[in-house]
Length: 112
Image 1 (cartoon, rainbow, N blue to C red):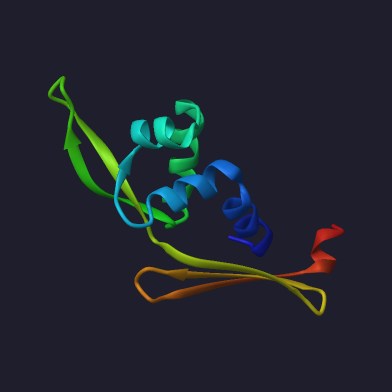
Image 2: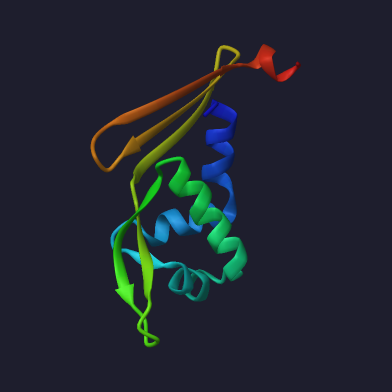
């Protein structure tokens, strides 16, 4: 993932809502959609992207009234920083595990 992509993910309104809502307790897509006023299809798309990038993860499967199970997600992102410094975009993700992920992108690569 490049720095620009990382910054876009965390500044996307729906993604930011999902990350904040799942910070302290797991939520299902349906709960997120209702509580955060996110259309359900958009909610599932953002969850898929966030999960692929390791920013949220499924931590439990909850039973539904129909006897099926639905995933509940929890944020793995504790802090995120975006810097523009000396012609370089820097994005840092501090994860709940204590790990840090850094992404860098020189502004010259944006011209191409």
